Image (tube, rainbow, N blue to C red; front, side, top):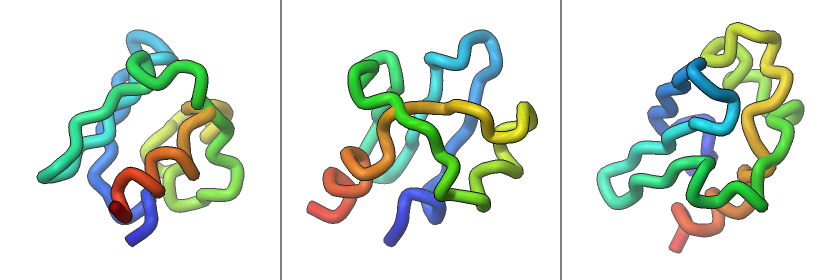
Length: 69
């Protein structure tokens, strides 16, 4: 399962606040700030981002690895 298939509500109060919610996960970008990354590879996420998917985080591969465990 890719990160794009997860439910990802995005709160625009801050670009640093991104919550990835899964039945087994509750991860925020603030928690993993060093891993914030650009979601340029992920066009599906652009629909959630509004601001052209500019930056959500440095987080993708890292979180995908956690989800796959």
